[in-house]
Amino acid sequence: MEAYRDQYAKLFNNGNKVTVIGISTDDDTVLVNWAREKKFPIMFASDPTGDVVKRYDSKIPLINFAKRNVFVVGPDGRIAHVMSPFRELSADSYDELGAAVAKASGSTP
Image 1 (cartoon, helix red, strand yellow):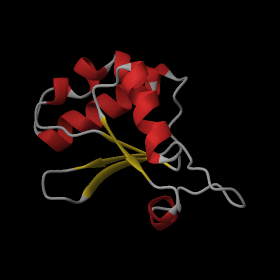
Image 2 (cartoon, helix red, strand yellow):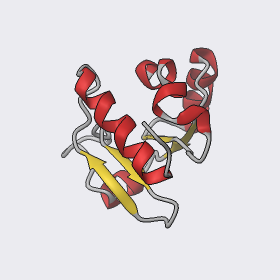
Image 3 (tube, helix red, strand yellow):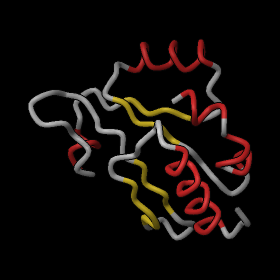
Image 4 (tube, one colour):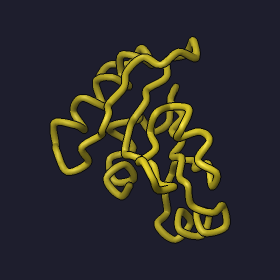
């Protein structure tokens, strides 16, 4: 998540026409404290029951933990791009994500 934070301006056009929501199975209190401590410029949603991660096929089988998948949703509310799994250690992943966000938001990469 730190890479998202550190590249927020570039990847997500500083939040212009883009909303970033990280979804975690962590408890909301733990999630809020962690996000505040790390100074994330994005929103987080707590999904302790795993309902959202199950719905989007992001649940790791047998445990209540989410895979690192990224969904880019266009202004029409439809999923415009999926990265499953998102390979957070690969620079190419961030290039792909930046291009997908730019395309979905109508911005230039």
